[in-house]
Length: 143
Image (cartoon, rainbow, N blue to C red; front, side, top):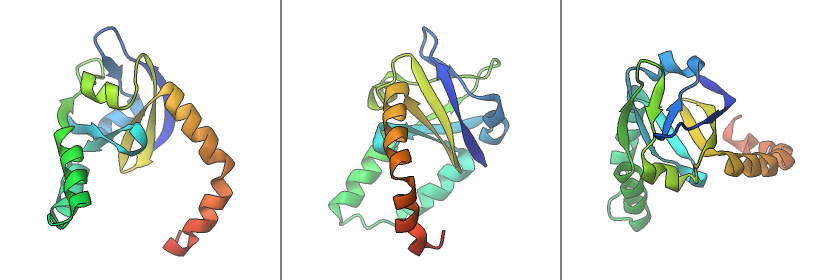
């Protein structure tokens, strides 16, 4: 399980040192793709395959399902860590998440999210203000 919040920075070549706590569970190869809320999603291959099976079941006759699948898969890249625990984050994905230099890497159960520093700080501040309201609204989901 991925959890925690880590502040990191890209090097001059656009590489990120993945937090050590995430490396083993992430595996040798993994997928980085466009995420929701203008962040990046990072999936171990096993979790990506689970998501892929769910996405295959979406109705292709629905425009919103087609758009979601296109954005998810067209932005996806297979990545791997180098010997120093770094991964290259492609420019198009950095642009999507407004990542320039500093960024946050956060664990979200079965996936990792990568956020531009300013976007994460703004998102987290807003979510923290309404955390209790959010909890009350999702209690019907069995949480």
